Image (cartoon, rainbow, N blue to C red; front, top):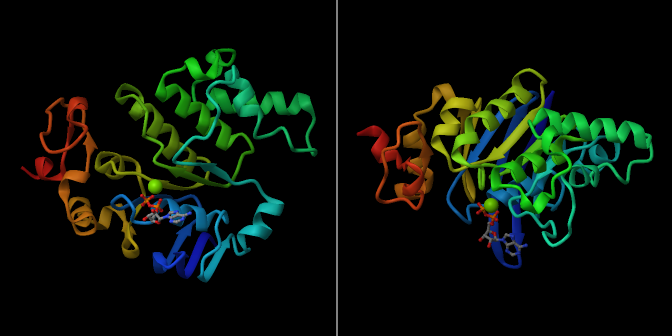
Amino acid sequence: MEAVKIESVSVVFGNFLALENVSISVGSGTLLAIVGPNGAGKSTLLKVMSGIIKPAAGKVFLFGDSPELYRKKNPIGYLPQQQNLNMDLPLIVSDVVYMNLAVRKDISKKEKRLMVAEALNNVGMFDLRNRIFSYLSGGERQRVMVASAMVNMPKILFLDEPNTGVDIVNQDDFYDFISHLAGKHGITIIMVTHDVGVVSSYVDEIACINKKLYMHDKVGNVDINEAMNTVYGKTDRIVTHLPNNKSCFSCPFKDFGARTSDDIKS
Ligand code: ADP
Ligand code: MG
Protein backbone atom coordinates (compact mmCIF):
# COMPACT_ATOMS: atom_id res chain seq x y z
CA MET A 1 0.00 0.00 0.00
CA GLU A 2 1.16 3.55 -0.72
CA ALA A 3 2.36 5.48 2.31
CA VAL A 4 1.07 8.75 0.91
CA LYS A 5 -1.51 9.16 -1.81
CA ILE A 6 -3.23 12.31 -2.96
CA GLU A 7 -5.85 12.40 -5.69
CA SER A 8 -6.80 15.47 -7.75
CA VAL A 9 -5.90 17.86 -4.95
CA SER A 10 -6.44 21.60 -5.36
CA VAL A 11 -5.69 24.18 -2.69
CA VAL A 12 -7.11 27.69 -2.70
CA PHE A 13 -6.14 30.61 -0.42
CA GLY A 14 -8.87 33.24 -0.76
CA ASN A 15 -9.20 33.38 -4.52
CA PHE A 16 -5.60 32.34 -5.18
CA LEU A 17 -5.10 28.84 -6.56
CA ALA A 18 -1.94 27.45 -4.91
CA LEU A 19 -2.20 23.84 -6.13
CA GLU A 20 -4.20 22.61 -9.10
CA ASN A 21 -5.37 19.05 -9.56
CA VAL A 22 -2.26 17.35 -8.16
CA SER A 23 -2.21 13.56 -7.86
CA ILE A 24 0.77 11.73 -6.45
CA SER A 25 1.48 8.34 -4.86
CA VAL A 26 4.49 7.52 -2.74
CA GLY A 27 5.39 3.94 -1.92
CA SER A 28 6.40 2.95 1.60
CA GLY A 29 10.12 3.45 2.29
CA THR A 30 10.60 5.85 -0.62
CA LEU A 31 12.66 9.02 -0.36
CA LEU A 32 10.89 11.52 -2.61
CA ALA A 33 12.25 14.98 -3.40
CA ILE A 34 9.83 17.75 -4.26
CA VAL A 35 11.38 20.52 -6.34
CA GLY A 36 9.99 23.72 -7.82
CA PRO A 37 10.50 27.50 -7.71
CA ASN A 38 9.56 29.74 -4.80
CA GLY A 39 5.82 30.05 -4.43
CA ALA A 40 5.22 26.85 -6.42
CA GLY A 41 3.18 25.31 -3.62
CA LYS A 42 5.78 22.87 -2.24
CA SER A 43 5.24 23.73 1.41
CA THR A 44 1.50 23.77 0.77
CA LEU A 45 1.76 20.27 -0.69
CA LEU A 46 3.57 18.98 2.43
CA LYS A 47 0.92 20.59 4.63
CA VAL A 48 -1.84 18.92 2.61
CA MET A 49 -0.10 15.55 2.74
CA SER A 50 0.41 15.79 6.49
CA GLY A 51 -3.16 16.95 7.14
CA ILE A 52 -2.20 20.41 8.42
CA ILE A 53 -4.38 22.05 5.76
CA LYS A 54 -7.39 20.65 3.96
CA PRO A 55 -7.58 20.84 0.19
CA ALA A 56 -10.46 22.68 -1.53
CA ALA A 57 -10.88 19.59 -3.70
CA GLY A 58 -9.41 16.11 -3.88
CA LYS A 59 -8.49 13.34 -1.46
CA VAL A 60 -5.53 12.62 0.80
CA PHE A 61 -4.56 9.23 2.26
CA LEU A 62 -1.79 8.19 4.64
CA PHE A 63 -1.50 4.41 4.53
CA GLY A 64 -5.09 4.31 3.31
CA ASP A 65 -6.54 6.50 6.07
CA SER A 66 -7.45 10.17 6.07
CA PRO A 67 -4.65 12.26 7.65
CA GLU A 68 -6.94 13.04 10.62
CA LEU A 69 -7.58 9.36 11.32
CA TYR A 70 -3.99 8.34 10.66
CA ARG A 71 -2.66 10.97 13.05
CA LYS A 72 -4.98 9.79 15.81
CA LYS A 73 -3.33 6.38 15.68
CA ASN A 74 0.23 7.14 14.52
CA PRO A 75 2.88 9.80 14.88
CA ILE A 76 4.09 11.64 11.81
CA GLY A 77 7.33 13.60 11.57
CA TYR A 78 7.21 17.10 10.17
CA LEU A 79 10.06 19.57 9.89
CA PRO A 80 8.56 22.92 8.88
CA GLN A 81 10.39 25.32 6.58
CA GLN A 82 10.33 28.08 9.17
CA GLN A 83 11.26 27.07 12.66
CA ASN A 84 9.04 28.87 15.10
CA LEU A 85 10.99 27.95 18.16
CA ASN A 86 11.53 30.89 20.49
CA MET A 87 15.28 31.40 20.44
CA ASP A 88 15.20 33.55 23.57
CA LEU A 89 14.27 30.58 25.71
CA PRO A 90 17.35 29.00 27.25
CA LEU A 91 16.28 25.51 26.18
CA ILE A 92 18.88 22.81 26.13
CA VAL A 93 19.08 20.43 23.19
CA SER A 94 17.39 17.50 24.90
CA ASP A 95 14.49 19.75 26.04
CA VAL A 96 13.83 20.73 22.44
CA VAL A 97 13.49 17.08 21.40
CA TYR A 98 11.57 16.17 24.57
CA MET A 99 8.87 18.76 23.75
CA ASN A 100 7.56 16.56 20.96
CA LEU A 101 7.04 13.68 23.40
CA ALA A 102 5.83 15.64 26.39
CA VAL A 103 2.11 15.25 25.67
CA ARG A 104 2.19 11.48 25.23
CA LYS A 105 0.54 9.66 28.08
CA ASP A 106 1.21 6.13 26.83
CA ILE A 107 4.90 6.14 27.75
CA SER A 108 6.76 6.75 30.99
CA LYS A 109 9.15 9.61 31.64
CA LYS A 110 12.00 7.18 31.73
CA GLU A 111 11.08 5.80 28.30
CA LYS A 112 10.75 9.33 26.97
CA ARG A 113 14.26 10.18 28.14
CA LEU A 114 15.59 7.06 26.41
CA MET A 115 13.76 7.95 23.20
CA VAL A 116 15.23 11.47 23.29
CA ALA A 117 18.72 10.03 23.80
CA GLU A 118 18.27 7.63 20.91
CA ALA A 119 16.90 10.31 18.55
CA LEU A 120 19.86 12.58 19.37
CA ASN A 121 22.27 9.71 18.92
CA ASN A 122 20.77 8.98 15.48
CA VAL A 123 21.60 12.47 14.25
CA GLY A 124 25.03 12.52 15.92
CA MET A 125 23.98 15.12 18.52
CA PHE A 126 23.97 13.05 21.70
CA ASP A 127 27.24 14.55 22.95
CA LEU A 128 25.76 18.04 22.66
CA ARG A 129 22.53 17.14 24.48
CA ASN A 130 23.12 19.55 27.37
CA ARG A 131 24.12 22.53 25.24
CA ILE A 132 21.88 25.60 24.94
CA PHE A 133 19.98 25.07 21.68
CA SER A 134 20.20 28.68 20.47
CA TYR A 135 24.01 28.62 20.76
CA LEU A 136 24.35 25.77 18.25
CA SER A 137 25.40 26.27 14.64
CA GLY A 138 22.69 26.25 11.95
CA GLY A 139 23.58 22.70 10.88
CA GLU A 140 23.57 21.43 14.45
CA ARG A 141 20.21 23.05 15.11
CA GLN A 142 18.79 21.44 11.99
CA ARG A 143 19.94 18.01 13.18
CA VAL A 144 18.24 18.61 16.51
CA MET A 145 15.05 19.56 14.67
CA VAL A 146 15.27 16.32 12.67
CA ALA A 147 15.76 14.39 15.93
CA SER A 148 12.71 16.19 17.24
CA ALA A 149 10.66 15.22 14.16
CA MET A 150 11.94 11.63 14.50
CA VAL A 151 11.62 11.11 18.24
CA ASN A 152 8.14 9.59 18.03
CA MET A 153 9.49 7.05 15.51
CA PRO A 154 7.11 8.02 12.70
CA LYS A 155 6.73 5.90 9.59
CA ILE A 156 6.30 9.07 7.54
CA LEU A 157 8.62 12.05 7.68
CA PHE A 158 8.08 15.40 5.93
CA LEU A 159 11.11 17.65 5.59
CA ASP A 160 10.65 21.17 4.20
CA GLU A 161 14.01 22.40 2.91
CA PRO A 162 16.05 20.67 5.61
CA ASN A 163 19.33 21.74 4.00
CA THR A 164 18.76 25.39 4.80
CA GLY A 165 21.29 26.21 7.49
CA VAL A 166 23.15 22.93 7.20
CA ASP A 167 26.80 23.83 6.86
CA ILE A 168 28.25 22.42 3.67
CA VAL A 169 30.79 20.33 5.57
CA ASN A 170 28.03 18.38 7.26
CA GLN A 171 25.66 18.04 4.31
CA ASP A 172 26.84 14.62 3.18
CA ASP A 173 26.51 13.18 6.69
CA PHE A 174 23.07 14.66 6.99
CA TYR A 175 21.82 13.20 3.70
CA ASP A 176 23.52 9.87 4.35
CA PHE A 177 21.46 9.72 7.51
CA ILE A 178 18.24 10.72 5.77
CA SER A 179 18.63 8.17 2.97
CA HIS A 180 19.56 5.51 5.55
CA LEU A 181 16.25 6.17 7.32
CA ALA A 182 14.39 5.48 4.09
CA GLY A 183 16.55 2.62 2.77
CA LYS A 184 17.30 0.69 5.97
CA HIS A 185 14.42 1.63 8.24
CA GLY A 186 11.68 1.78 5.62
CA ILE A 187 10.60 5.27 6.62
CA THR A 188 8.82 7.18 3.88
CA ILE A 189 10.43 10.58 3.50
CA ILE A 190 9.06 13.47 1.48
CA MET A 191 11.54 16.29 1.27
CA VAL A 192 11.41 19.70 -0.36
CA THR A 193 14.80 20.75 -1.68
CA HIS A 194 16.38 23.01 -4.31
CA ASP A 195 19.58 21.06 -4.41
CA VAL A 196 20.25 19.09 -7.61
CA GLY A 197 23.30 17.43 -6.07
CA VAL A 198 21.24 16.07 -3.20
CA VAL A 199 18.52 14.84 -5.56
CA SER A 200 20.95 12.96 -7.79
CA SER A 201 22.95 11.40 -4.96
CA TYR A 202 20.47 10.47 -2.25
CA VAL A 203 16.91 10.47 -3.51
CA ASP A 204 14.76 7.64 -5.01
CA GLU A 205 12.10 9.70 -6.75
CA ILE A 206 11.61 13.29 -7.84
CA ALA A 207 8.43 15.30 -8.28
CA CYS A 208 8.46 18.69 -10.00
CA ILE A 209 5.77 21.07 -8.83
CA ASN A 210 4.72 24.48 -10.01
CA LYS A 211 1.08 24.75 -9.02
CA LYS A 212 0.57 21.61 -11.09
CA LEU A 213 2.55 18.41 -10.97
CA TYR A 214 4.94 18.55 -13.95
CA MET A 215 6.38 15.12 -13.48
CA HIS A 216 7.02 12.41 -10.90
CA ASP A 217 9.43 9.59 -11.63
CA LYS A 218 12.33 7.55 -10.33
CA VAL A 219 15.49 9.66 -10.27
CA GLY A 220 17.23 7.09 -12.51
CA ASN A 221 14.66 7.65 -15.27
CA VAL A 222 15.03 11.41 -15.32
CA ASP A 223 17.43 13.99 -16.69
CA ILE A 224 17.31 16.01 -13.50
CA ASN A 225 18.75 19.20 -14.95
CA GLU A 226 16.26 19.17 -17.78
CA ALA A 227 13.40 18.49 -15.38
CA MET A 228 14.52 21.33 -13.13
CA ASN A 229 14.81 23.69 -16.09
CA THR A 230 11.28 22.85 -17.18
CA VAL A 231 9.73 23.49 -13.83
CA TYR A 232 11.93 26.39 -12.70
CA GLY A 233 12.05 28.17 -16.02
CA LYS A 234 14.97 30.21 -14.76
CA THR A 235 18.10 28.14 -14.14
CA ASP A 236 19.65 30.55 -11.67
CA ARG A 237 17.30 29.37 -8.95
CA ILE A 238 18.76 25.91 -9.11
CA VAL A 239 21.71 25.15 -6.95
CA THR A 240 23.83 22.17 -6.32
CA HIS A 241 26.56 21.60 -3.83
CA LEU A 242 29.40 19.67 -5.29
CA PRO A 243 32.70 18.83 -3.68
CA ASN A 244 34.87 20.92 -6.00
CA ASN A 245 34.85 24.52 -5.05
CA LYS A 246 34.15 26.06 -8.43
CA SER A 247 32.00 29.07 -7.85
CA CYS A 248 29.02 30.13 -9.87
CA PHE A 249 28.22 33.68 -10.81
CA SER A 250 24.49 33.64 -11.28
CA CYS A 251 23.26 32.02 -8.12
CA PRO A 252 23.10 33.39 -4.59
CA PHE A 253 25.10 30.50 -3.17
CA LYS A 254 28.28 31.20 -5.11
CA ASP A 255 30.27 31.79 -1.94
CA PHE A 256 29.63 28.21 -0.94
CA GLY A 257 30.90 26.68 -4.16
CA ALA A 258 27.43 26.11 -5.51
CA ARG A 259 26.87 25.80 -9.23
CA THR A 260 23.87 26.21 -11.45
CA SER A 261 22.54 23.42 -13.62
CA ASP A 262 24.09 25.13 -16.65
CA ASP A 263 27.51 24.94 -15.03
CA ILE A 264 27.08 21.22 -14.54
CA LYS A 265 26.27 20.62 -18.18
CA SER A 266 29.30 22.60 -19.37
P1 ADP B 1 6.74 27.15 -1.81
O1 ADP B 1 6.93 26.36 -0.57
O2 ADP B 1 6.78 26.33 -3.07
O3 ADP B 1 7.71 28.31 -1.91
P2 ADP B 1 4.16 27.77 -0.66
O4 ADP B 1 3.50 26.45 -0.67
O5 ADP B 1 4.69 28.26 0.64
O6 ADP B 1 5.28 27.82 -1.80
O7 ADP B 1 3.15 28.86 -1.18
C1 ADP B 1 2.49 28.75 -2.45
C2 ADP B 1 1.70 30.02 -2.70
O8 ADP B 1 0.60 30.07 -1.81
C3 ADP B 1 2.49 31.28 -2.49
O9 ADP B 1 2.11 32.22 -3.45
C4 ADP B 1 2.08 31.72 -1.09
O10 ADP B 1 2.18 33.10 -0.95
C5 ADP B 1 0.65 31.25 -1.02
N1 ADP B 1 0.26 30.89 0.35
C6 ADP B 1 0.81 29.92 1.11
N2 ADP B 1 0.18 29.83 2.30
C7 ADP B 1 -0.79 30.78 2.29
C8 ADP B 1 -1.79 31.18 3.22
N3 ADP B 1 -1.92 30.58 4.41
N4 ADP B 1 -2.61 32.19 2.86
C9 ADP B 1 -2.50 32.79 1.66
N5 ADP B 1 -1.59 32.45 0.73
C10 ADP B 1 -0.75 31.47 1.03
MG1 MG C 1 8.22 26.45 0.95
